[in-house]
Amino acid sequence: MPVLDPNPQHGQKKMLLVFGAFFAIFIVIGVIATIASP
Image (tube, rainbow, N blue to C red):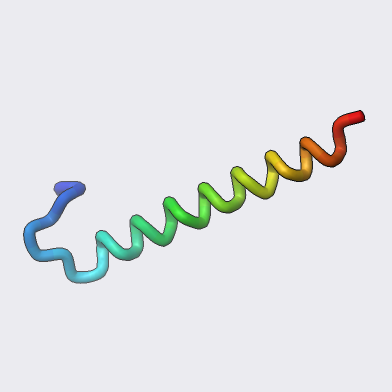
């Protein structure tokens, strides 16, 4: 399954959504860690 499909149906969009969600969670964890640190 190629990452860059010439004719993306929904795979590209879904992968981008998963990556965006993972990045958002990473940012939230970073903010919480910054606030929680003394």
